[in-house]
Structure formats: C-alpha cells, structure tokens
Image 1 (cartoon, rainbow, N blue to C red):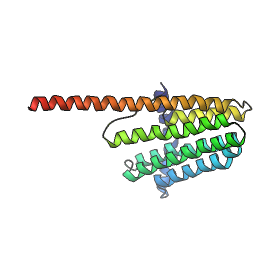
Image 2: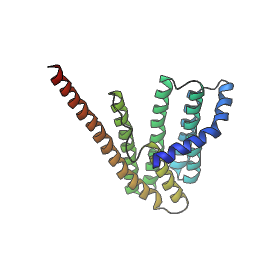
Image 3: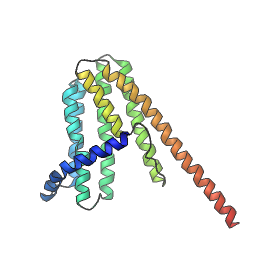
Image 4: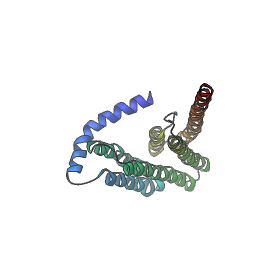
Length: 215
C-alpha cells in the first residue's frame, strides 16, 4: 500500500514539476546539477538547522530540497532517459543526504542528553546504509531486491514525522519514531537477504536441472 501511495503521489507531483523541469532544461541546467543542488540543500537543513535543534526549520528545508529527487528524474526523462553517470550520481547523493539527516539527528539527541535516542539514530543510519547496500549488491549480481517494509522513502517520512512531533513540543516523538524505524530497518535487511537467498536457491536448482537434462 505504501508503494502504491508513493507512486500516485510521485505521478501527481511530476505533472506539477514538469513545467519547471522544461524551464531548467531550456536554460541549460542539467539534471546532475539539480541532483547536487538538492543534496546541498539537505546538508544545509540537516547540519545547519537540525543538528542545532531547529527541527521544524530543518524539516522544511530538507523536505523542499528532497523534492529535487522528483525534479531531476523528470528532467532526465524529458531528455530521453537517465544516463549511467546520472543514475550513479543520484544514488551516491542519496547516501550523502541520508547520512547527513540521521547523523545530524544523532548528534542533536546526544548533545541534548538523550543517549538512547542517539543510539537509535545511529542504528537507523547504519541500518539504512545496509538496506541500500544489499539492494545495490544484489542488482550488481543480476538479481532483483526491491522489497522491504522500510525503503528510503518510508525512512525519510518516518524521521520527518518524528522531527515534526519533537519540534511541536512532544519530546518523545523523535526518539520513539527512531526506535520504530530501527526495528523496521533491521526487518527490511532480513527481508532483502531472504529475497536474494530465494533467488539464488531457485537459480541453483534450475542450473542443476539443466545439467541433468544435458547429461
């Protein structure tokens, strides 16, 4: 259901953003420039505001900057598709942005004296990196791995919700969401490893069958 909702929202945003994308392309701005600019905006919001406890301001800046993920994708589509380097750059900048967001949250919670919350943020940071790595490694080996209950969009939505709750005065909101997200991230890692294992077992079985027929 979350994926269906995400796809429908993304489609609606694309219709709004497409005129902007055409305008940027018309003046010579490339999707890669937008990708880097969006990541820079996330860094400003996360490190410049979130890490200092200005959670609402940081959330607004990060959210607006994250919209470039739709914008650069739309620009690439209008140009005839994403280039190999563009796809590589987009994925790399996503990792930078994720690290800045969860690293800043961990830092703010630590200096605020909430060590358990900081631990949860660090678990989310490491877990999110492993979730992304498992998918990239599986796809590099020729398998699919687009499964799991806490993919990148869900992780960012949840940490944003926690930041909003804490920014509105509910101090328990962010740590609670982070612990929930930490658990979901670990479950997602297991789901992806299990999914890859199933594919390798099926491939090995098919290979043995083929060898038996050839023999």
